[in-house]
Amino acid sequence: MTRMMIVDDSEESRFLLKDFLLAHDHDVVAEASDGIEAIEKYYSQKPELVFLDLVIPKLDGLSVLKKIRFQDPTSKIIVITGNDRIEIFQECTSLGVLAFLTKPINFNDVLSAISFSDEICIME
Image (cartoon, rainbow, N blue to C red):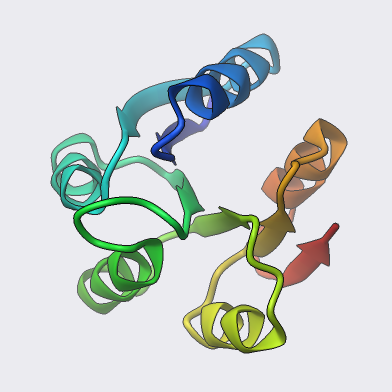
């Protein structure tokens, strides 16, 4: 069972993703609604995989991604965003995300992204 964290400012989005992950035998150990909370919970809960929205309050998702990757280069992060600009995709991939999923998310793509351990993928 993989220990996961969901970072999204939308309570509904967190709920739907959490419910889906739990139904597929994953353990959601933390949820965060903003960037500061995300960093705090990452270090306190030590999830094996993070689902990270890029548009979140207090500290944007890209900054959260950079901070986590700087402190923990082995972190596994899947970005979920409504922003499909190529520049954002390129920056995220250069920072080593496992996958870049665009909203609205397809839950089959979530399962596919989880199965990738060392590859970068883009799913729309």
